[in-house]
Length: 333
Image (tube, rainbow, N blue to C red; front, side, top):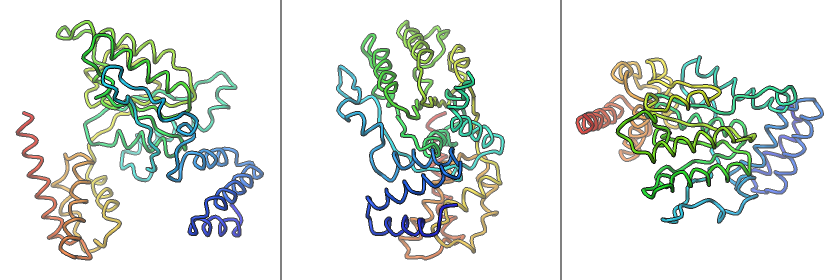
């Protein structure tokens, strides 16, 4: 445990906005943890110090932003670099899924030990499941917990109508990622990983999948590679073998919905809200649907100048989301 005086210096410098003193105190804290043989904690703190606090990440500082790859024809950037600040306690998921994520984090923290013994950590992950159930949040949480910047691949920019350009864009993304240590995140992965056996698709898709397989096989880095899909059945069978672990997300259970509402309303008073009366009505909704109700309830309360979320306010928010989901369901059938 860091000394009380050191912690006071750390908090006081933060409140004053004294970045130099904050950095000095943080470095002393890291040194103390090293002396106590808390090497994993010291390493994590060092990474957070380098990549966090709203400042550009170390990878961003190392590579000029103008070097971010672009689509040759349209000039659009192919990726975004983010510094997520989302942590494990924000993931409302099953205990089994939590355990899988813990294993990924623990193996990565012991990366050097595993490598020294010719063992590989889980660094290539596939996240699968319905939309709005925490896959993107999971990628952000892994990045935050490990103190790594996150590369978010923009598929609207990567996919091109020009022959051969999609494969070329993928090469640019992998080449850029190879130059640093990140969490590399490919969302909506089925957009490029669709099965090559689909007879309705033309040869260009097959070339894109082949290119991706080659790039992934040759991707040697301390980075973590994460792909997420809402349509795992569409993925090419060869892709499944490339991932070290597969994490299946699902819609929240009644208990998870209860926890989610409590967490999302934690910034406002809601002690009189009868959460249980709403939970059963939300079973079958995604995490994002439940969150939307909570944020809508907070907005309604603010606009009504209410200091507490009541059953009446939450009912109004719930009904708005229920009607929205009915419209979405009708238009997508």
